[in-house]
Amino acid sequence: MKDNAQVVVRTEAVCKRFGAVQANRDISIAVRQGTIHAVVGENGAGKTTLMNILYGVFPPDSGTVYLYGQPVRFRSPAEALQAGVGMVSQHYALIPRLSVSENLLLGGTGRLLAPLPRAQVLERARQLAEVIGLQVDWDAPAGSLSVSQQQKVEILKLLLRDARVLIFDEPTAVLPPADAESFFALLHRFTEEGRTVLLVTHKLQEVLEHADEVTVLRAGEVVASMPVREKPGAEPQVDAPALARLIVGEGGVLPEDELLLGRRLSETPRLRVEGLTVAPVRSRVGLRGVSFEIYPGEVFGIAGVDGSGQAELIDALMGLVTPLQGRIWLNDREITHLPAGARLQMGIRYIAEDRHLRGAILEWSVAENSALGLHRQGGFGSAFSLSFARMKEFAAKIISRFAVRAPAPDAPFSALSGGNQQKVVVGRALMETPALLLAGQPTRGLDAASTRAVHHAIRQACEQGAAALVVSFDLDELLTLCDRIGVLFNGQMVDIMEGERRRRDEIGAAMVGAATGGGA
Image (cartoon, rainbow, N blue to C red; front, side):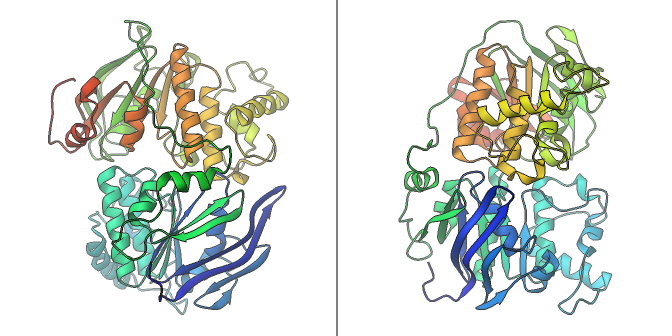
């Protein structure tokens, strides 16, 4: 902790309400220059709301925000950027069809709101890209970049506008370990340059390893704010169990530490994939000759660095892309060329990696999103007349089972926090036992208690006869939840690990091509 550092950001008794939900109540925090200040709390604790107030997405109902000792009330993110405050949210704001350079130029203005010349912006962007380790084709569509590349482009946008206060909301939620390490090295470089970082995260180990100070929110209020360590480089003076207890409060659910392994319920595979080859859509290489099987009762994990073919695998299994080669069977019935709707009818359920892009419609209600994709199954009326009452009833069950913090089933989906949105998407897939669950980053942005609930729901579904495929960049999640772990590298399944070979070091080596063979 930098005791003599200037307080750059300070909030005083900030309150924000959305209808019946009190998102922030009398929030007072102080963030010092040149520090990484972590903000932690359960889903719905008010973390993202507070960050959005600092970034000008919406104003506080009451209270004051101070920047460098002066009261500010930003009316938009553009105003916040002009004052030197920038934010990278959970869902990146890049326009996928525009090129990288076009995204950088969007809203490109200087301190005096004058448009920046294109050549000047791109020259400065190239210089900064070298600093942050971004190698990218400036003319490539932003949607073709890997997650870590997209994140660096977002950071580049802020640096181009000379942001001195950088806000990151769950920045490593979908980053593989190597990219997460590079990201934090970059944050430390920023603080050494005098920039200030606000970090929202559910990963307590990140707080202990990298933060200088931490603020804990619970139910919209500050319950603790403290230094993590006495000085940079010192050992943390708080531990993960103590932070977890502050986050959940008395009687709350602490993170799990047991393995959730299961057993095969049949020796006949539920899913069989042979020689699957898919053209690259959201990765560099797509898939090349991938083969594996998943059995009823088991959770099969997919590990790999970002862009190794995970997106193409789930898309092909869900029927969202057509393979170039290979075949797919579900319960011994070939489904290689069946559309997604037919696969849903057969009991395949899908948790999209990006809930905003493929998992939900923000403008619709919680009830309507709860039925999304299931509305043709017959439980919500006929194909010509859907029953909103039945949708609300189904949504209420999801809200109850997965502890979703929502004002009501008919509330707008956009009114929910990111974590609670994710719980609705997960609940929709798991309220009834699927034949096969395809889950992309199922606990993205979830707190410890919610992550535990999702893990147990997946395991319970498998105990009842489901098979599950889980893609995650979090090796701890895969090791906790998965019976076998397949490793994708450069579009190929280079290994399938189980038993004693389910080790972090061996999986990590296979992810970067340092060790191949053995199980695939």
